[in-house]
Image (cartoon, rainbow, N blue to C red; front, top):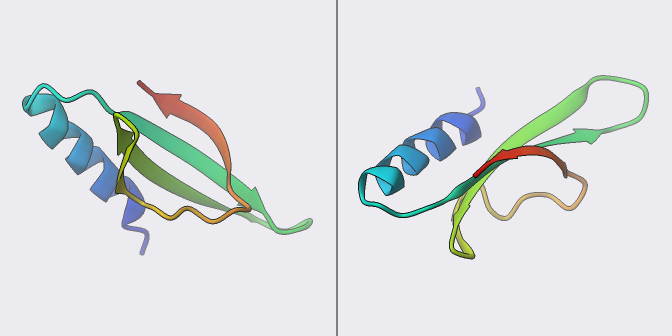
Length: 65
């Protein structure tokens, strides 16, 4: 089971409650013609909060600021 998204969302909520801005990133990695893998990570003011280190083969496809 993936835990990266629930962890990132929970951390984002806790930081927002304390008035700290953060960025929630969503990424995907393709491994050829088959299915892709996805990942979520969170940073706040340049500080890596959850989901780091993200794999080098993941490309950010969206984020919430």
